[in-house]
Image 1 (spheres, one colour):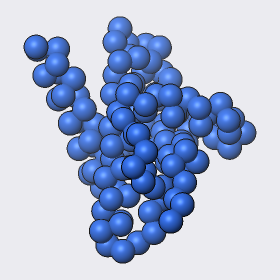
Image 2: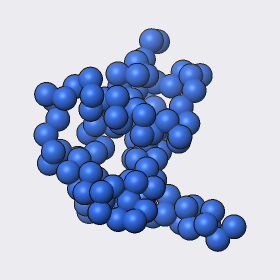
Image 3: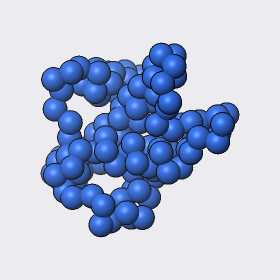
Length: 121
């Protein structure tokens, strides 16, 4: 139970960090370092990726409410938090030459969502 509360708190913290205008965006290098250096680093990195995914999704929904063209469209397709790591890794693998280690994780995730959830309407 306490573990579940911790994970919710971590997820909420990631979402708040993404929402804050002056928040530091984690780079690809920093995410890899986190995964390798902390005891629970891989779990922390996964929760960060979920936060990035949910932050981007919220941003797209807000842009649609404001009448702007969205970056990606879910259009009834499945997009779950558990898919965050797979989307991120697939994007990095497919477009290795497009990303440098100091680029923000958000950029990779945005590319993954744009490529996987293209707008059809």
